[in-house]
Length: 340
Ligand SMILES: Nc1ncnc2c1ncn2[C@@H]1O[C@H](COP(=O)(O)OS(=O)(=O)O)[C@@H](OP(=O)(O)O)[C@H]1O
Image 1 (cartoon, rainbow, N blue to C red):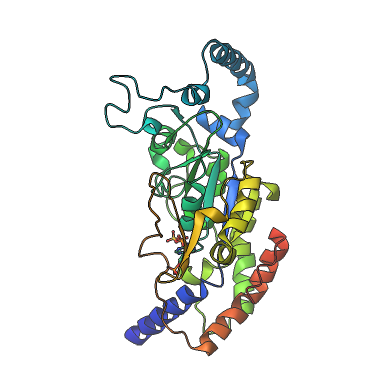
Image 2 (cartoon, rainbow, N blue to C red):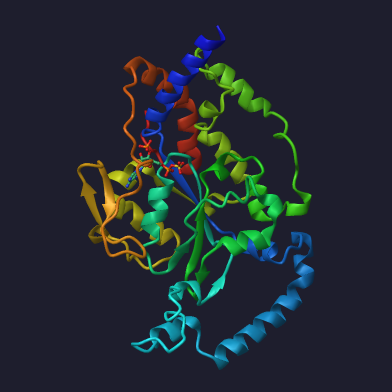
């Protein structure tokens, strides 16, 4: 019995994986400048007002120093055609790794898993004003105890005017993540152990929506209850701090969707149609010139995998199960993704 249970679960997993193409959604959470300010000084928000004067003095000093020497951006623009002897390029280290400072991200791609988050990040990285860490840091879910300095150290250096970014899709479904991102819960105060109390509202909704054949307690199913996870984030951030990016449009019209993303981040519209080509073999848009390379490149093999055939009745059942949750999500996000 145990084995047949496993098999059903396994097959259903494949079905979900296939269905995820229909359920792609991404969130970018603009970062919350006040939260980061509080975080970067590792002080509770309540103390922030008391420190305001100190910040003012520091800011003034910074401004004076900036006036005395050209900003990194100006230095770069005025760089000599050949690098100075013994300079960064002589040592073989890329200029971007030696200039600028490491900062906390101003924008995070927080989800959703298998929603096209890697594509979004790699597309954004071709923008000259975006610098992003390649690997997923998992700071706000797995490595929170390592502390803020550890997190900042992972970030690439940025020059003035550049945005630091990271992506970790599991933040979206991590109950503690929004509070941590906002700095309400500092590393040494973080809850340890299991998840918080079960939400009775969700249990009820799951019972109502379940056909009896879908294991609603299973994480692979719960992960797709976007409305539920978004609710958790909206307890900490206003809706205007989020951009909902369509995973489907990232495939069918990457330049169009990236236009929305650039506007949201306050970036000049640099990424356009001319950066993409459709690779027939891969079946996805690829980059003509990815960051740090002049050769065209598609995402790796683990992105855009062949999916197994899912019987239409299974897909239908999944659609019916998710429909009420999706509609709730459309209402909350203000965007109808047409997943029905
Ligand atoms: N340009 C391009 N190239 C390849 N793949 C693309 C692209 N745009 C979106 N996608 C879809 O992205 C899916 C993987 O999503 P994520 O990167 O968010 O996955 S992960 O959660 O980080 O593991 C991946 O899912 P699978 O098809 O299941 O592999 C793709 O459907």
